[in-house]
Image 1 (cartoon, rainbow, N blue to C red):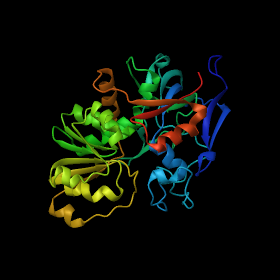
Image 2: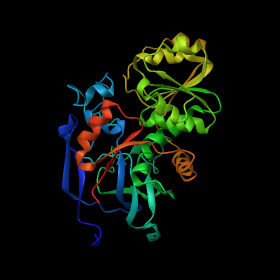
Image 3: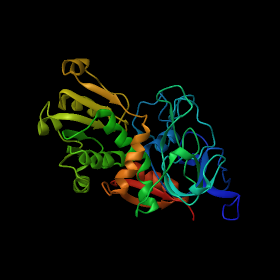
Image 4: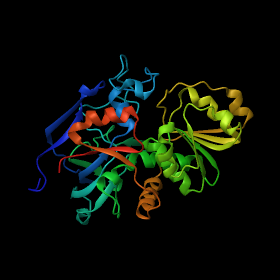
Length: 363
C-alpha cells in the first residue's frame, strides 16, 4: 500500500449469526488489495439495509418463519447452511454493507489507472459475469466483503461513476434500497397506473414511491399514520395507515399493481385489491415470509406474481442517471459513526424513521 492507503483499516466484522455481539468493530483489519479487474474504494458512507440484519440474524434460513423485526437479537434456531442471502453458508468473518459510495484510490491489474480519483457508487447486487446461469448474482456484504469499513474492493464494472452534488451519505442511501425498488418496478413493468406500495416509509418503500411517481404512477402508499406527511412529500398521492381496512378504503379490484416489501398477514388483501389482470411484485417479507394464498384468487383474476432479486445492468445505470438529473432525492433519516453500528441497527429496527440510516467510517 502507498503512504496514503494504510496497511490496516477500521471496519466491522460479522463473526457469526446471532445478536449484536456478532458485530465486532476493529481498527486492525488488513486493508484489502484490489485483485485483477478490481478497484479499491475509500468508503465515504454506507447505508444500513434489511439484508444486513437478515444475514446477521440468519433470517434467510428456512427454519425461520418470523418477520425480521422479531429477530434483532437473533433466533433460537437456524440452519447455517442456508442462513445467508445466497442460500449457502456464509464465509466468516465477513464485512457486511451492501451499500457503498466513495472514491477509487487504487486499481488492480487490467484496470485503467485513470479510474483513480473517480467518485463512485458501487452496485449492491451484482451479476456473476462468468456464470452460465442467466440470473446468477451476488450481494456485496454477503457473498463477498462489503462497505462497513474504511476501504472496500469491487469489480471494476460494479463501481459506477456518479457526477452529483449529493454528499457521500446521500449517495450511500441509494445503491441497495433504490436499485431493489427500481428492479421491482422494472420487473412488474410499472407505468402510469394505480400502484399500491407497502412499507412506504422504509428505504425500499420510500424509493418505490419516488421511482413509481417518476414513471407517472398514481401512488397509494401504506405506512404508519405518523409518517404520512413525510411519505406524501416523497410523492405519494394517497397514504393509508398500515392497520387500515384497505378493502373498505379503496375497494376490491381497484389497483393495477402492488409492490410489497411486507408480506405476512396483509398478503391476501393485496391480491383482493388487484384488478383482474393485475400484477403483484415482492422484494421482501419484513412482517413474515409465510403467507396464506387462495389460489382461486390468483387464477380466477388472471393475476401475475413477480419475485424480484436479480437486476439487469441497466437498473443501476438508470438509477445513477436519475440522481445526476435530480429526478429523485435522497432520504437520509440519520447518520451514525461506523463504530456505533449496533445503535444504528437498533434504530433501524425501531422503524421510527422515514428513509435510510447511514454509517460513516473514520476519515
